[in-house]
Length: 208
Length: 224
Image (cartoon, rainbow over all chains, first blue to last red; front, side):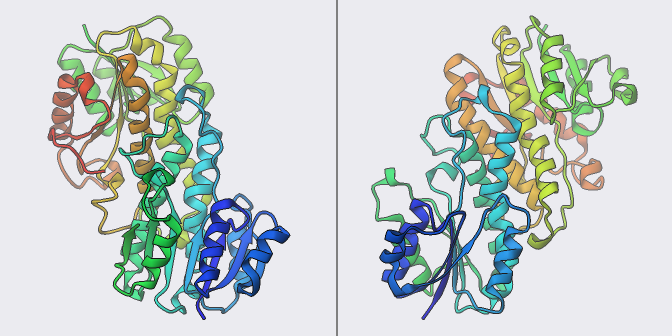
């Protein structure tokens, strides 16, 4: 059975990924700022192996998560933890602290956690790391009004995944970027992620 | 006479832009962190203003000093690079914060602080300095994590800004200087005067229809 770690498992998109992976017979390691509620736990059933606390803004959070994991192999990690703070603000109302915090949560934290989890991923079977970027992170194409902190941090996250794809390809890590948004009307973004991970032909960098 | 404000004008590309725009007859305002260490900029004839582009209070103070003065082009050039060789496990949160505050907040903070000055001018242009390191599609060698993240984010920010400000008549454009021989690159690459000559040509030719583009010193679009 394959194992996936999902950050932000307590959020809508994190839980949606957890349910899809559970339905595909994956073993789920859930991490989030809050514990899953009873309904979420019940929906994951026996697939939910463990829950760990993870707050991307807390110093040492990534190291703590890697410590909990120990020597366990990971076949995939889905980085669903994010902030959408300030997405309704026009440019004139942005603040430095708001913008930098969005970058730390949505760009730096996934990068840093991925780096901390490298030994576990390297022990996995055809490992993959999944960044949830959405249409907001595809520069030049997003039609969302405002959304400055989200667009900037997700575009940067996409660039970080591209970097990792280049640098980690020699040990077989595949870097998957989910750019699908609900507005595309395409297949369910979660299904596209699962299909990319399951496909042995998925290249070291892949946008779905 | 057209006017341009250039941030980070005390050295490298910013200093050369001050020189070349001044020679071309533009009224140049160059901002620096330390006016007492800006002799080279002073020699270009530029007016010198103090600014720490990563500090909101410094931006507010600059806006107050420039209140009521039309500025045709605000060029957010100031930027920093840190630890370009670090691998993903070695990039520190403090490094990221510093680079984001300067390379991302700095340009948008400057553009917003001086928006009224720009709207009062004829050319109504705000420019941010991008880099090929920003391009996701051109990234096939990795490295430079904090710098790449900041510039990819800056592209997204300016693209979004163009969507909002172009309707007000403001041209929001990103420029790419090329790989230029400066302190940041260890003095390897294109002569700075050549890059800046190209940048000046691009700035001179900008129109509202160029809003949302990222344009190289050679006039060619850079892929996102």
